[in-house]
Image (cartoon, rainbow, N blue to C red; front, side, top):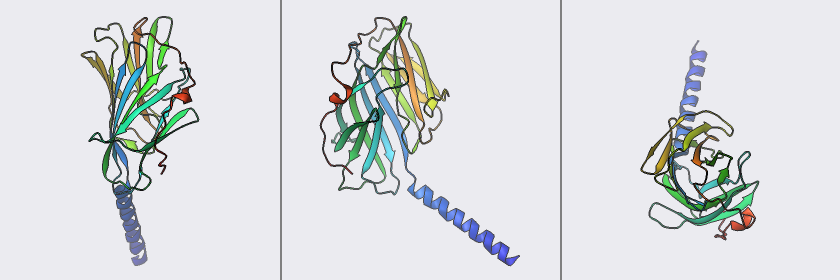
Length: 239
């Protein structure tokens, strides 16, 4: 009996210590907010504000993979404009184009960060508007589905090309790639539609928004170059 009690005590202690260890080193995205402005010429200007909590971990920065297409969707081209912290100071970053993703590495190979950091990623998207017989549509994977950490809150504010626009439709999806779960809500005010998650997103889960607009709302110009040619040169400081 004494041996059994000792084993139970050791098991409890091991579980307690492992829980403390995982909590101490757990990383998460506290908030992921994207401001999405649809231009009348069909381009889309996006600013992602990512509040990332490294906990006590020592890391060089973050990775952000942006998909360049979706099922039955157009091939996108993306031009990174800047990546900054909450004080407006530029981060070092690198870009690469692989497996139909724009892959960003943000941070310094010779510096470590920990705790809560903010990453503001501003970029222009071309060829994002889908054209149908009876409407035009922006189908946007806001967060992507490649984060290996939990996203506690995700939101997208989509600014309409015309504040007076009517007869548009809205919906959203959450979960793993291809999921039809709808743990999200949306509302419209002052020429913008806001989408928000209603529960946390687990690793490899994301928020996708859909905005349908009347035909003729915008002009969607075809790409003049291959998508990879829009990538801008960046610092070679990989980590």
